Image (cartoon, one colour):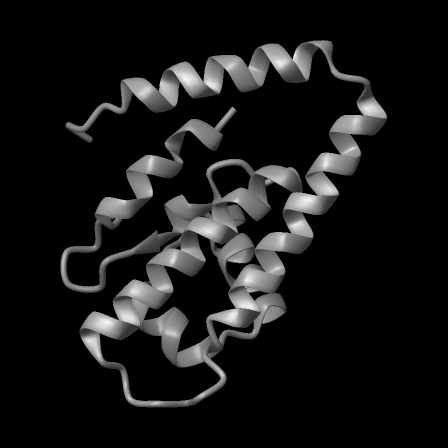
Length: 134
C-alpha cells in the first residue's frame, strides 16, 4: 500500500496514550458505545448490521475475502440491483464502520476481508482504517 496517513498515525499515537492511562472500565464502556454506534450506522445505510458484521468477521477469521458487491447483495435490505456508484459507496462506508466495530470487539483489521471484486484488492477507503489494527 503506497499511501501513508501521517495525521492518522499521530492521531493513533494520541489514542494509544489515552488508552494506556484510561481506566479499563472506561475503555470497555467506550468500546461498547462505538460498537453500538457502528451497528446503528450500518442499519441506517439500509444493511442488516448483524449479517454484514457476521460475514466480514467470519471471512476475516478464515483468511478469506468478500467483494463489496457480494456484501451489498447479501446484506442490503432493499434487495435492489447493484448500482456500482451508490452500492460501492454504501458498502465502503459500512466496511469502515465494520472495521471500527471489529476493533471495538476484538477483531482488529477486519476490513482486510473486503475487496474490490474486479481487482481483488482492498478499496481506497480501507487504507484510512489501517490505524485500527494492533
